[in-house]
Amino acid sequence: MASLEAAELTLLLKLLGCKGYRSDAMSLAPSRKTSVAQHARICLSLSEKGLIEYEQEIARFAIAPPGRTLLTLDGKNMLLTPDEYKVLKACKGSMTPENLSKIPESSRQRFIRSLAERGLVKVTKQAITQVWLTAAGKAFLLHEYVPEGERAIASATLLGNYVRFLRAGLVGPPSKDVIATSMQSPPDSLKPDRQALVKHIKQLDQALKTDNRLPIFHLRERLQPPLSPTELNDMLEALDRNCRLKLSPLMEPEKYTEAQVAAGIHKEDGKCLFFISSS
Picture 1 (cartoon, helix red, strand yellow):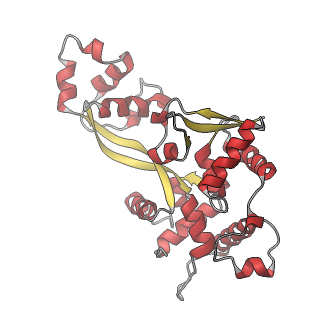
Picture 2 (cartoon, rainbow, N blue to C red):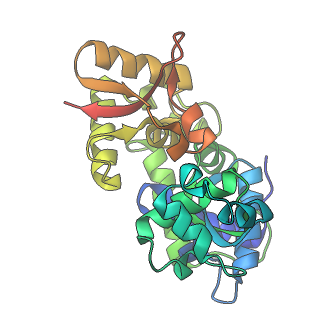
Picture 3 (cartoon, one colour):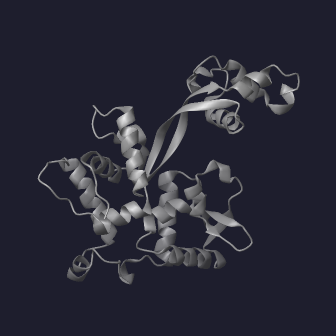
C-alpha cells in the first residue's frame, strides 16, 4: 500500500472533485502558500507511486550552440520551416513561449519541441499543466487507502469529494455483501455490461469534449477497475464487430504520452486501436 503525505492526500482529494478526475495542475495546489516547485514535487511523487499522470509544457528554453551555428549557414532554409526559423532567430538568452509573439500561441510548444528534439534549442524548465487520476490511483483510493493518524487534513468539501468517489465506485446502493468485500476485487455484478459501457463512452465523450473520438486511455481510467484490461478490450472489440461503436487507429502517436499510447488496443499487425466513436 502506498503511503501518502498530507499534501499528496490533499491534492488527490481535490482531484476527486474534478470532472473526469482531471484538472489543470495549479488549481490542485494543496494551499495558497504552496510554491510552484513544491507543487511539482508533489505531482512527481504521486506519479512515481502510479496514482496520477500529468502533462508538461515547456516553460523556459534557450538556443543551443548547434542552433546558433545553423543560423549562420546558407542552407538553413532547407533544414527549418519558416516558423521554426522565426523561433530560432527570436532566441535572445533565456526565453519563455510567451516571448514568441510572432508565433501563434497554439503552435509555440510544437515548434519549440521540434527544435529541442534536434538539439537546436535547450529546454531549461518545464511546467506541469494537466493532472489526472490513473486507474491504479482509483483502485488504491477505492480499495486500499485507509486514512490514519490524528492530524486534521481534509475540509468538509474534500471529504465530500472522497465520499462521492466511494459511492460512485459502488455503482448502486451498497449491500452488506458489497461492504464486506469492498477491499477485495470487485464482484462481477459491479462490472458494466456492454450497454452500460456504451453509455459510459458517450458520457465521457460529452464531458471531455472529444467530438466522438474518445481516446481509450480515458475509458481505462474510468473503468479499470472494475473491469480488467482484457475484459475491456474484449467488450470494445465485440461492440465494434456488432457496429455499436467504431474503433479507429492512432495515426499521430507523437501527440500523446507513451502511457496513453500503451493504453490502446495493440494488434498483431502493429496497428494500435486508439479512438472510440459511438454510433
